[in-house]
Image (cartoon, rainbow, N blue to C red; front, side):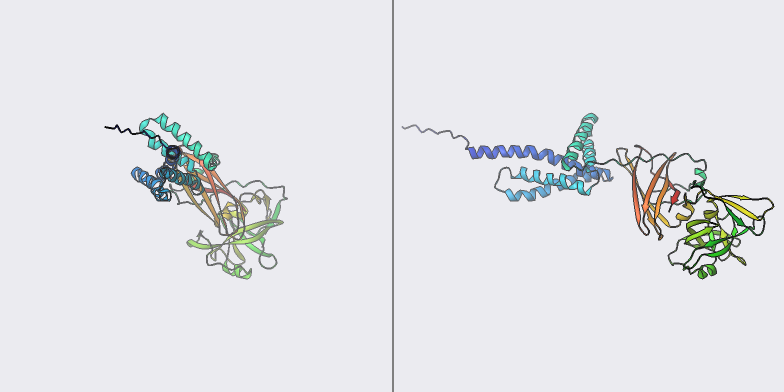
Length: 408
């Protein structure tokens, strides 16, 4: 009988190359897929979603599209690895374009997923993932400016309302010290009456030439007022959407429309953009309204004994105009408290007037801490948002806000 022998065949070069490609692609695919999945998982965790839900969504988002992409290389041994690698890489390159601080989401996802293996391992893996994704996407997080602590103010407690939740903001209109201005000579105004019934005349700019109008010099009124007849004579219409203010009159509290005068002259000193409330009850005879703190507070006022005149030294004409601005600005805000202790605040100011606002300073009160948020350059009819980061770990679950200063 003849002996049959089988000749052992060695793998062909093509099969060896295919197998090598398979291992190379798998080796490249799994870390990229892990980073993409960790980012999606961490993003869900940071949004407060249930852990099981965040993990499920991350797996589906990484694996399911890759399985569909796998059909393009159905005959190739390395097709699955190539599909996972390309899809995961695409996620890592595109997500930072739509998700702010996606590298931090990767870090957070890795730390949460690896926390059962030990805090040190999870921390190191999270940092490494953050660095890799930041370098890959070149979209590493640019740290927000740190919000400065607000200077201590003895009367803050009396001016702050009840605690607020995010998106529930208030604007306070208390009295601040006026800011200094340039050297301007004093104004001498003749007065009529005495005691609390001092009457002065100032010029009001309107569509026509400036017109002299008599006001009651009232240091107890926050806003300057004019009656409806005078506004009509000045050619000033009352818009339907004019802001309102609550005035305390002899007959009780009334809701009044607030307008913005282009200019009011106190002697030789012009006051630009003066808020004026409509108040018929504040006019009596030749006196057409009240000259309130939004004007008188811009001067140091002295009355000469025995003389029927007031001396007014300008001290804040070009400074804080909060009492005027606050009726024409809407504030909206959001406070984001991340699980890793980072706290971010975004304040949006919308200008309802036809005059640009150059600067707002808002005090944000979180517990025993207060922070200053400055919003600059708010165009007429436009809005501007400022984002700041509070010290890590600040408890800002409830907060109060106060508009502290403003400039046209």
